Length: 262
Image 1: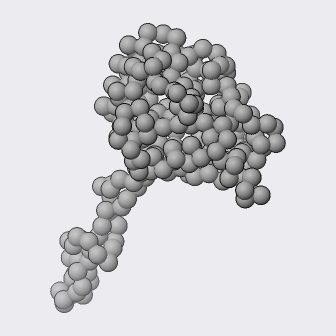
Image 2 (image 1 turned 180 degrees about the horizontal axis):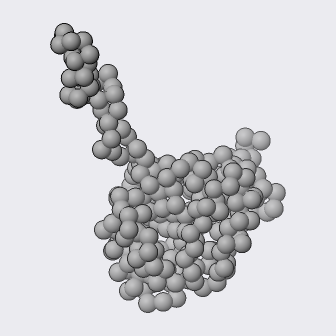
Image 3 (image 1 turned 90 degrees about the vertical axis):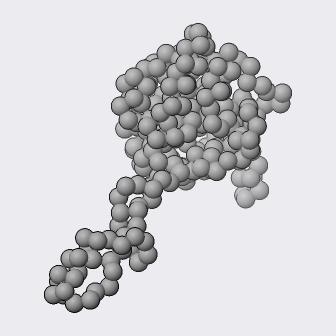
């Protein structure tokens, strides 16, 4: 069983049969995704750290001015918000279900927002909040009107930034686009919106299921326009690739060459 699971981890999702997909779904249900931590402005009592003058003074007053132990506090580490933009267009049909199950696991971990992109932008965080993954997928299917349609990445990214990102959702967040980068509109619009996104977000990650194919190069107009504003460009075709994506989202870097995991 362990051997078959290990083989499945590296199989391309698009090539799985029904039984293998069911096994993949069970593995994805146990997945976890958290953004890299950041030092927040909040502080908590701690044995080591900076002296907390207010608590120290209160302790002195409580003791009537008698000497008291210095009270200390330290900043609280919190995971950064993660925003997932999942492409559900026709070219992504073999991967969309697995990627949304990956997103479902991420939402369960907290501080994650999920949108689908195709010909429309749809926020599906609430639908993915169902504990049962199959119920969550059914809710997403009912909420998303543009399954297997075209792709308007630039226009929808602009809509996301204008409606959600500029207000604060993308500020300081780790934003992950899960898409093959096919764009039917002017790729210059996508390039401009990616630059806006990169200026707002802490990091921008792009996971492309096509990247793992032999001889792949990011030469499609949309992908080529987006890549200069991407901090990490990774594969997204298998469970193992999604595991590596989770590591990247947590803040690890796996290389330094443009167009390769970095």
